[in-house]
Image (cartoon, rainbow, N blue to C red):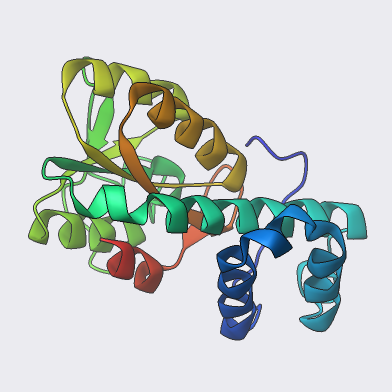
Length: 204
């Protein structure tokens, strides 16, 4: 878990994320982000809803805006790609023990969803990805991405992870000259993490 704090934005108003997108769309605002970010955090009571200290809440909101900016600036290039992969975090599985029937292939390295729980977030995301022609990987960590990219020529990547992992991954894809889009977690941790399936569907 890259952050030194836990967060849960699942109770934050959906309009908060729409506001983030507006901020991200305005590159000038993005460059002078500090005051705008603080206003957003206060307006939507991010501190009260998440229990985070102000500095942690601001760090999280700033990172989310960075992700929105990168998504917007890279969208045109991404839409031109053909061969794509969807990278999902294994910590969003419904079960983290042997009740999860996903198989793990260390040569890839990735888990592969067995669709054992209809209400599992990873199962739902895997189905969405496959329907849209993506190769789907369920990763135990961001360090698996270079191995996957080394063995497959994916033009476009959609990654789901915490904000810091997405930033690292975005920089890696840029260095490779590949296009990417990102879906940040709304709840982090080592297990039972969450992301918006609606956001993922829209980006796919």
